[in-house]
Structure formats: structure tokens, C-alpha cells
Length: 130
Image (cartoon, rainbow, N blue to C red; front, side, top):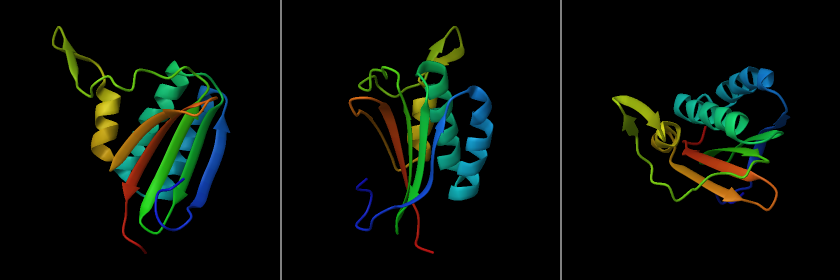
């Protein structure tokens, strides 16, 4: 995973096949990370994967000495990752790009990649050692 000099400890690794499984997965992320910003970013990524991607949705939560890492993946085609992060207003209503914008604000790093089989959203949040 390459998120620090030490190997990450996997805290959670699951596959989600239907929308009814999202709420328990979200609750587990909050319990494991104890970080509201990372939890909200994860909720957004899970919702986007379920809405726009294709199951199964993968959820990986890991910790290193200095970082929390969450990866959300799906079997969908992904999206244009070069699209700029901005909030678009249409007739005074916020229309799109909000989720990616807030994910970027709540995490120290957000990246996207296609691994040949799955589209992966990777979110990293730094923390102090405990």
C-alpha cells in the first residue's frame, strides 16, 4: 500500500453487494478510524460506488504508524479523474462535484486509479502515533 515506512495493519476488508449493507459498513469505519472527516469521505465514496459503480463494492481500512488509509473500490468504469474539483451551481442549486470536493477537503490525500479490474478511490489521513 505504501502509505508509510511500516507495513499497514488491516483493520477491515469487506465486500458489499447491496445498498442495505452500506449503513453497517459506514458505522464500522467510524468506530475503527474515530475520524469524522475520513468517515464522511468514506461514506461519500461508498455512496458513489454503489450509485455509479458496479458491485461488489470493496472497503479496506488500514492503519500505519502515521496514517489511516481507506480504499473504496468497485467494478464500474470509474470517471474522468482529470475533471477539476469544484462546486458547480445550476440555477442557484449545487449540482455536481460536491462529493469529490469535500472528500479532498477532509483527507490529506485522495487519489483514484484503475487497477485493471476495479476502480479504486484511496483516501489517506495523517494521525499521531498512539
